[in-house]
Picture: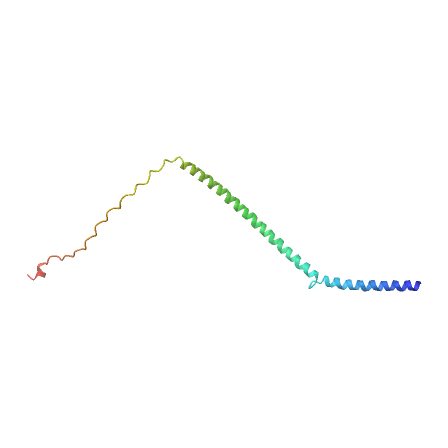
Length: 129
């Protein structure tokens, strides 16, 4: 009976050794940096670092944009106040005179006559006298 127990104990130990060997091979393939999960983790870690840098740059850009938008909003509010004052001041102006009534079209000027070219009176040398 002891011999059977020892044989079963050795068989169990050998089974556990084979099981551990198989798990060790799977774990080494799993952690392989080239093709396994270790490579995927390394790539994801690099992507997280890149995303963190991009996020910091986006936050800096957003804060500068917020500052410029605040300045533009303040400027627009100032212009709106000035426009409101100008519109309110226009109510105090007297009304403009009515536009002139339409008149009949002005008569057209007569067409100019064609210019007449005159010769100077002949001088004594030209007349032959």
